[in-house]
Image 1: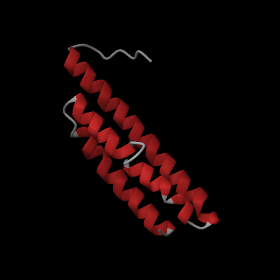
Image 2: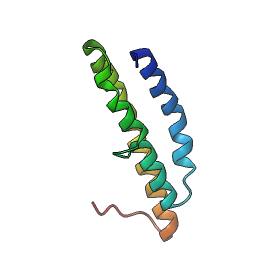
Image 3: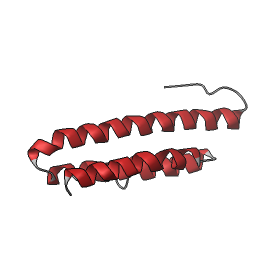
Length: 98
């Protein structure tokens, strides 16, 4: 994979992820979306990270930075959606017990 290909794939996922996350209407559906996006074995972001070693050394840093930025965006959207689903299912505000 080349850097332009990887950046294109990152941008596609950036466009696709919000609809997937917002489409999760239950906590179980949210879990499936989370696994599909950031799961350790089969997540789309995991696959992108696994492709980094195939890039030339000088392209790895910008590619890794782009993937990490996308991961932060997806993680934030996932947390927001999860909190909303928990609040809706409990009838009250979500409590962070971490």
